[in-house]
Image 1 (cartoon, rainbow, N blue to C red):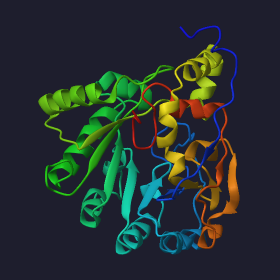
Image 2: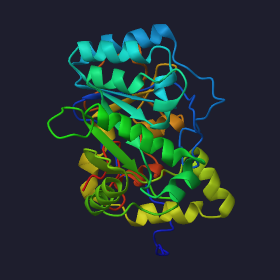
Image 3: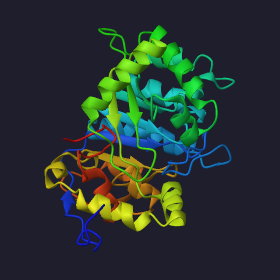
Image 4: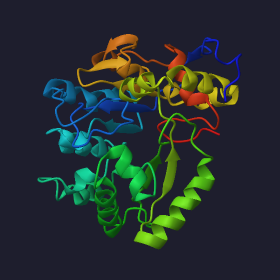
Length: 314
């Protein structure tokens, strides 16, 4: 249980960006799933989608800022009609392209060739699999999702993903079932490898352990159950200053489907804008050393072993 002292709100320490390396782009909130923990509140009925003129700015910004990584997210970003052309443009520039994939999208009608496309383009796949147990995954993400996810992983493995020396990176994402911190990432990764390998013959590159952020759908669940204040207190109590130099916002900037800039994906969902307004500003503006806008939700990234789009920080 969090201490009484931790229940008193405290300010998150000030941060400034270091060298920008990663552009994280949210192509829209439409998704073929509606997961209970989703901080984006994505789902099949969302209609937000990035316009073609905004999409065309992305390769220009990658070049102008000399960025090394394009991190594509959603929703299910693969449902955007410009997804594949954006991937090709990024790879032609020699940039690492990350697809944040929910795995079930690989078996959606019209996406049967998606896995082969990702492999052919050399895309890094970061795939959501919040547990290696079927009941836990289906409870969080919907009935039948676990089996479809295993099918998707097998399809990726068959193309070389997660195989040693293939050059095709397949990272799995774990997040807790409720308002608790993830267990130590390395030990959990070993358990994932053992169970998924033994039961399903699945291989993967790394496991990324992420904390659930008290934002949107998950925050509303906690609010209804009376657990929101307790979870926020837990995150504050478990804050570690040693994680501050490694939080993702120091090297990353987030772009929403309209082209507006945010210091991270979580700030985007809370509508806390960055110092400059729009993607086009990055054609001229270098955000290095710019102050990062922080708030109490940021403790979700520094609590315990830390949590970011790249997994644990410690």
